[in-house]
Length: 440
Ligand code: SF4
Image (tube, rainbow, N blue to C red; front, side, top):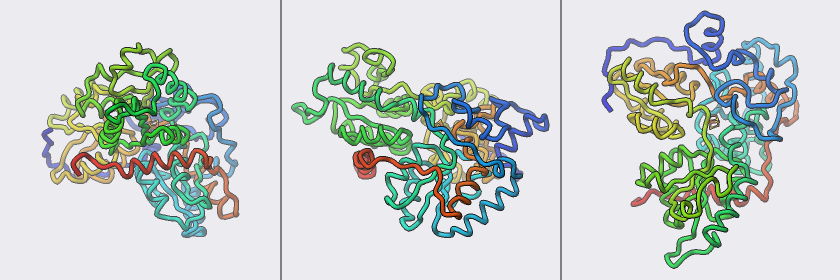
C-alpha cells in the first residue's frame, strides 16, 4: 500500500490517445498498439461486421448488432481543427436545447466538447438533471444511451453519435439466453418467485449497469436489481437479504471480485456458460451455489495481468497499483486497491504527496488523469495501447454530424427503449438507488 514520495517536477502529458497511437504507428514514438487500424477513422469499420480495432476486436459480435450508416464525406475528410470549430458552433447555436455527455473512456478529442464527463451512472444522472433539454447526445456506448433514454423525459431525444458503439460485455448477456437460463434454474430449484419458510426466494437476478435495457427489464420483472461497480457490494447485500442465491450478469469478474471480498467461497460461485446445458454446472453445484456468475467479461479489463503488476513493482518501487473490479480476480488480488473509475479518480485526487500510480483501466482515462495530475507519475499497467473498441467508434466527425443535424431540425441516431421494457427496468434501477449499505 506504500506510496512513492519522489520529487517529480510537473511535466506536460498529451491526454490524446489518438495522437499517441499515430505517433507510435509513424515511428515518431516508442511503444506498441494492439492494432494498426487504430490510426484509421472509425468510419472505415462502419461498413464491416465486428467491433472494430481495439480491445474487443476478437469478440464475437451478435447477429443483428446495430450498424452505422455512412458518415457524410464532409465529416470524414474534415481536418480535426475544422471539426472542433463546427462542434463548437453547433453547440452555441443549440444552447440549452442540447446536453453533450462524455464517458471517462471516450477519446480526448470528444470529451473536450462534453458538458459532463463521468461514468455511465453519473452521466445518466446528468441527463436527468436537464429535463428541459430537447436532445441528449451521449458520447459513450449503446447501453448507456438506453439507460439515459429510460431515465429521461419521453420528449427528450437521446442520441448515440455512432450506432456501432455497442459494448462487447453487454452483448455477452443476450435476453433470450438469460430467459433460457431462468427456465433451467427453475427446473432445478423450483418456482423462482416462491419464498421459502425464511422468506427468501431461490434466486435474485442482479445485473451490472453494463447490460442491455432488455436485461434490466428482465431483472426488474423478476424481483432483481441493477448495480454499478461503485455499489456492487451494497447491491449484493440487498439481494442476499431477499434470496438464497444471486444470478449475476454479465460481468463474471465484477461478480466474483465483489462476492469474494464479502466472504463468499469460490466453490460456491459456479459459472453459467449459456452455450452449455445447465450453464456447464451440475444440479447439485447450482443448489449449493451462492452466486451464479454469467460467462461475460470486459475485453479491456481482461488485458491486465499479475505479471504486469509484478513488472510495475520491479520498475517502480513503492508504486501504488489500483485496478478496476472488471479485471480478473488474480489481478485484483495482486493490486493494492480495486475500485470503480470514480474510486480511481478520487484516490488520485486525494494523494497529497507526489506518487507513482499504476492504473488498470481504459487507457483514455489513465492518459487524461496523467495529464490532469502532473505532480504524480501515472501510467497504464498494460504497455500495449489498446483502447475500448466501441468507445473508439465515437469520433469528432460523428459528434459534429449529429449536432449539425440537430441545428437543421433533424434528429439522427436516436436511441429509444420500448415502454414495455422501460417500466420494469426503471423498477430495477430505482431499487438500486434505494439500496443502502448494511448499518447505514
Ligand atoms: S470498457 Fe469494457 S465494459 Fe466498458 S464499454 Fe468498453 S467493452 Fe464495454
